[in-house]
Length: 265
Image (cartoon, helix red, strand yellow):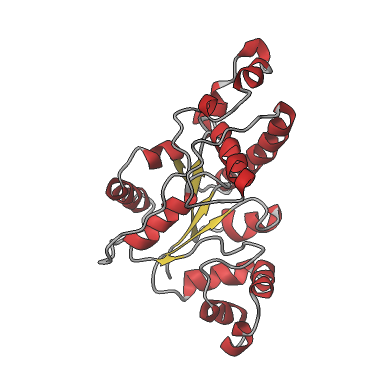
């Protein structure tokens, strides 16, 4: 039986860089958004065929959308084959919207064979990053530092409520099933060199009884930060107005830290 690591997060939390680094640095079966609606990123045809008891020829003949639909319809079988038939530890990530909440709960969150790693980040940074990248339809490999956006308080509140609910459901479900999850904040990622971050993750997984081994490959072409601004205020055109929309003109500190509060983990 192999270990399976599910990276639980939302968009723009540093998971592309994090997964890219771990996949290039560790001897693992590295994947990305295997339950994405457009295509099962990182999930190969051989594994899909094995999981669903279909021929490789049949799976290979499908386009990406149909493969994604098939994988999303059978998440338990996909997870089971990763646990029971893969030789290496597998790593993938799951975002809100990939699967409905009941399926995420039963297939991943309540599954003791899956190590849950929650990656959190300042909600304001996530929201701003998402909108800056969306404004130019570029989600990587382009510098967005000079782009400034306007923030709408009502839109932000609705978005935050949705994402906060995702993080709460994930953390509460794991805890209510008498399991623990590993918590990593974006600050843990950006404050470390690549080598330090790999060693940090290896230690965290060792504490979960999951031994990870570094690969012999040379790590190169890692993803770069799109935005090098120092604070949310530097990224937003109407920051003073946005700030004044909060009681007393003060934005609560948890909007700058993470979706989960410190006493949540």
